[in-house]
Image (cartoon, rainbow, N blue to C red):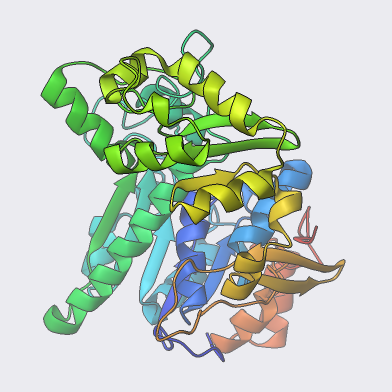
Amino acid sequence: MTNTMSGPLAGIRVLDLGQYIAGPSACQTLADLGADVLKVESLRGDQARGIGTFGEAMVQAYNRDKRSIALDLGQEEARVILHKLLAEADVLVQNFRNGSAERLGIGADELSGRYPRLVHGSVTGFGVNGPSSARPGLDIAAQAEFGLMHATGEAEGEPQRLGLAVADVAAANALATGILAALYQRTATGRGAHVQTSLMEATLAMQAANWGEYTITGRAPRRKGNGQAHAAPAADVVTLADGKIVLSAYTAEKWSALCHLIERPDMIDDPRFIDNPARVAHRQELLAALSEAFGTMTRDQVVARLLSAQIVCGAIRSFDDIADDKDVLASAILVDVADDAGWYTSPGLAFTLDGRRHTTSVAAPALGQHTAAVLHELGYTDQEVAGLLDSRVVGDSAFNCPSSKGSL
């Protein structure tokens, strides 16, 4: 495998056997940081390739600057190729259902014995030790079973999923962090490690504050819509002439500043609003006063006024608004990525190192796009590669793959 990219992980080789988001997203972080990432797919490809436009967007979002080799790991010859790749790799990532890696001969114990320096990263749905370890795990199941949906939505409404695959993304971030820690540990010990996480663990870890409140008070978090349960105004939404904003001004200082800003100093000492418990109890009356003060103004006007008083606020905006946001553009987090269909824009890494954002901008590969090149790097001749293609041990983007395009 070769890598022409620079970055903190230059020289690190990664095999990405992941599907959908959790595994590929973790590997995308490593690729952005300079690792050489080879996406190892079945002849049908990452399952995201087969679920329409959103699936293709998923492929592009989490597979930039990777190469793709298609292997039928049900065949012994394909597993031989995989082990040749493993002999040169630093990291293997997979999010198979529990037991699948062992059936393929790439379980953690076997890999540790054969490749002691290898870091093996795995993501499951429900962990590996409990009674649900064999269950298939998708993002929505984790959101449902571990508290997110129960606590999201209007107080009297239906539980709501969050508007993104948040459990998958959180698990990917956890896995990438664990892999980086294992690589650092390897510099001292000379040995790799098995990094394990699950959608369950990542979902619970995100809710540390809610869990702490639950253990202290004995009351489970509940749906309450907008607005925090014990403070007001806090994360409250106000409707304006051209949309909505959210604001928080629940400390005594900020509450006083807000009252003066809307020319209602009488509200400061009003018994209904004298402190947070009172304001929470009379939240609707408080919001009515804010709507009366701001309702005929635009979002830009109200945000400017609130910021002049150092009150935390934000206009509620769609992607159409965000695409041209000056702060977003100044951050350079959005990168333009060229592919066969033209180009698209994708967020890169959410951090910089010494002011530099190590984000790649090479489009996700088509299924099996680099199969022949990778096999040649492993020493296979043209004739041997042709034979492997003919026997469907491997596939490439021009021959033998049922679905070959990874572009939008």
